[in-house]
Image (cartoon, rainbow, N blue to C red; front, top):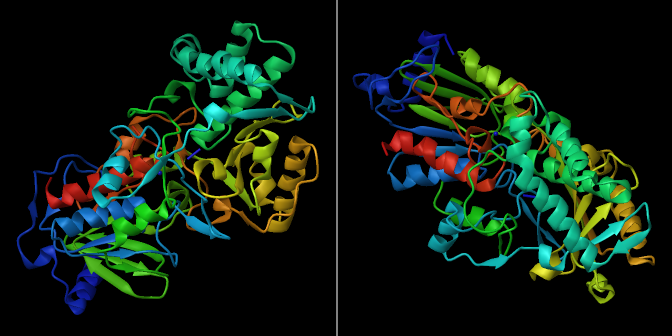
Length: 477
């Protein structure tokens, strides 16, 4: 809110490049490999040079662990910046996170530990105590008592009912099935039922990055929880402070898109779009699931069938943002801070608008557009999207709001190096697929990213720990 053949020619190329590879000493295993079809339980040794593909938090975490372990490595990043889906921009002096924003469930969270290690300040990020709500069909603001009752009966009530709904509904049931069953069983009717459906659709789409009909009830809420609130802490200067601290000692090559990864018995060769080739003993590939789904990079030999099936079956949805920077936080004088906006359409999710001024960042309102309404940002120009949100805010405030002095609109779904938001389990998928994606391939290829962490899928901390996990297998942890 807030996932190789042609050995002879490969070896010739490796020899020409002069890199130290496993071919220069006996082929050993850190532990005896077991498995089949390219999947093994451990990596082969020695670990001489590791090519990390991607400088998102998974790749940076992996490279940081390799750095501490004294293992030679390089990070190849397609973009001209660090962070991947953690992207902080300066919006007329206000830091705005266009991707991940919160350290969710911060107590015991490894990202909290990381921030403590680097002395990075955080601020509380819970919007609930000052949450307001506006019903666009009824053209009115809900009073605080209505908001509190709604939170208790609907959001808290649904979370309490998930386990029971999962047990009673068919195995192939979707999150949408669960929402409809919950509304009927609780006896919600009329406008209250409509708002309940809209806010629960928003909750599911925010959690899954996709429509409720595309999320399996079987795996809904299946992730591991740390302590503290979902809306936990916010890095004081945005996630860029975390990313920059982690990347400080690392060797990162920017504007270096990887197009293919070849694996042989003696090492790996990674070819980039500019024709350059990096060689090493192992590689950690941290590109998002949306990129893997697009067939990038090419793997030779191809990913084992079970791994490829997991890539194709797991879901990868959409989540966009529109942020408007104003001269002043005029909405605070109207008694409005963070807001849930209920749409006129029955089956459209509610929209959350966050007041970054309330978090101490500055006078910015940031709308979060979940999957089924992401087109409101994706299919419009920046000016059109900003004008649309300004008109909606004017409706909520009750008068024409001033022109913003700066705007930013995301397009993660159209970003070739992302392809969407984050991973979820649709009907037909299984949470074991996350563990499958975390296994070494051919003893030399490891995947990392939030799509390889079944306990914290979709969270920045899940991506972070996946990078540590992958690198730890090479370091020998």
